[in-house]
Image 1 (spheres, protein in one colour):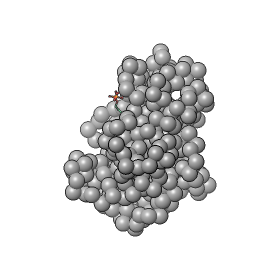
Image 2 (image 1 turned 120 degrees about the horizontal axis):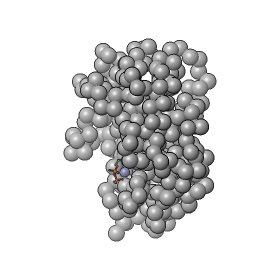
Image 3 (image 1 turned 90 degrees about the vertical axis):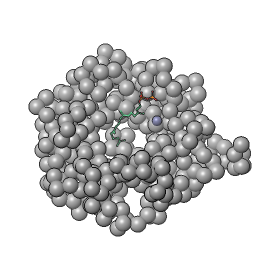
Length: 324
Ligand code: GRG
Ligand code: ZN
């Protein structure tokens, strides 16, 4: 039984989440850190974006973070998950997103980073994740999001990229990781996000997809990622952001979803878990807070559903001159 007073139930314990994130960053010797070592860049994006959404980015040392990020850059221009590891398109996006949070994209050799990303596009318009060649619509989204933040979308064949994403659309209105693969909320976020950024949402059947997405809400109020699966806080992001991008968010019960997310908090030590009573982790802490942001929960900054960055950060980028 939690020692926290019942007055905190049903409320966001923002200060505790901030403390949890700052502590997770310090506990580098913990088991979780060892397991996560190779994807530290991604973890840093989750943690720092959550801090910014809670208006506490100022509590971390910008210089330390930025110089560590730059130690992860490979001569190819891509970024690795940690110093000395191999580059991957996912960590490249996370690095660019973190630099965007700190308004530091200008320290990058934008031409070099964008050439690394553009070099991963294949003949059919799809993208590989790295030199080993795995293809997935996750990588299409990542490439498009990253190049759009760098204002270098003209370095790829956008028309072919969109054509490939559309070839992954299913009869249920959803999208999978490759042509013919089953619809999954995570892949739907990627495909809808990429189509939103490139101004191609006319390829989505909004009513059909909206129906599939709102069916993801379970009796608990939480959302699942596919039919018959358990609800999980991270789908508050994958599903809700997609519903917002296609203008169908009013098809779910927002209050019930907010309650599900709040019920997944560790009220004593901070952090958010996938489901009530499970152990917290930084991934679900980010998706819980980002989900509450999409639900316009008081005290949480607005997040952009396509770029997965605070709206004020995206506005700052949009109004900065192009230098690709
Ligand atoms: C910038 C937000 C952001 C993302 C970058 C990495 C990425 C792009 C997108 C990943 C999209 C994706 C596939 C998300 C799903 C992650 C997940 C919870 C997978 C587990 O799926 P299942 O169906 O698990 O195996 P459950 O437990 O739901 O049955
Ligand atoms: Zn999850």
